[in-house]
Length: 389
Length: 144
Picture 1 (cartoon, helix red, strand yellow):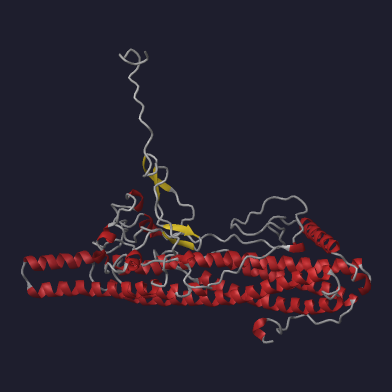
Picture 2 (cartoon, one colour; picture 1 turned 90 degrees about the vertical axis):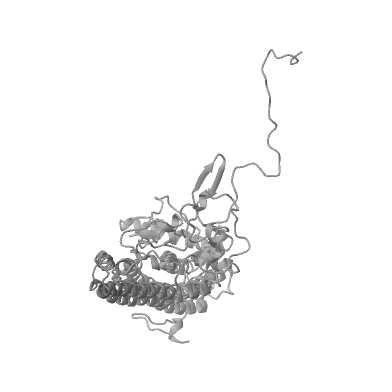
């Protein structure tokens, strides 16, 4: 419930890379299962609240008949009961917060979809891009000012539609991200004391697939929650940009102003004998996942992070003005990446400062710089005059 | 207390009971019935939609949206854990009270209960849970 949460750092995406049809495709999703989850969160809230009532009344009765002051057993029992009641109260609050946050997220996405769909309808009413370009070229060749003006107008209309849709995506990103601190991950349950004296009988390992705490037998089947899959276009995050998919605006620049998000145990890419640099731009620290120092959002594709020498600046670091910001804003340079929406997005991200213990990329497996290498051995072999006498 | 804290909401079929040892037994029976007849099926029902995970914004390349989806997934996993825990813990605590009251016939005897007795009661309750699950043909790891 704290903000900013470095474990879930987002990042600016350069939406100017995409045209209206592509953006409409991004939003073209069935949100009905999401709305079902809103109902499920409310159901979790209600059932927890009602059971909380039962357990509180039960506690009152137990305390009257078997007061905690009677003996240690009574005190221990009431402690367990109180712990359960407290965790249920937390669950009730979290379920309510998550129902509201998810509802807000879905509403935001629904509105964005509606707006971009309208723009898409207008887009489809315009001539195809190739057609407009061909008309413009023909008009230029024939030096027909009226035709040139018409063709230019068509192109400008589509550019304007693109710009509107891209702005919708930017504001949607921001609005959705504002729900992030409202999402509540309930705290892990404490299982100390006499409550968990099991295990009793051997049984097969739990198969919940979530890394959930499920050591004890449960009387209800745990659903397997799938991890949040990376979007189809996330390859461009991972590669530091460059991949251009179909339906994008021709001539678009670096698609994402950010590298790959999550990696917990990221693979390393060897770049030479005994030299390895993490491919991920993110690293895990004591305060959560943060952007690796030196990683730059929107790095040009020809210099992916794993192939740079340690300490070598990326193109954007070396040329801050080209990244759309001044050199006095290194944080914005790291988080901003590309054009579009930089102002508000960068402002928002100023609150997400990197912690002092951010890991710097260090070559692994190489000799220390300040120590001499191993003494070279010169062995001319037998029979050399002056040796082995 | 207000409704929001869950202390005063009326629960169908539930009524407060007087405080003596027999009422403690009655309490155990009522709470156990509430867990089995209401809490468990409703928890199971709530789990259905959760199984889909974070479905919103899956097609978008937005990093912000992905971050929100990641946290939301964590919310789902933690909530499932918590709901299972509160279900199992409630049943276990009720079974323990039931056993304790059976073992000690009076409130005076109850005063002699030791921590070891309590721990034994938890172990027995856990064993009884397992037996119930095996008997019902459930999967001891994943439940029914």
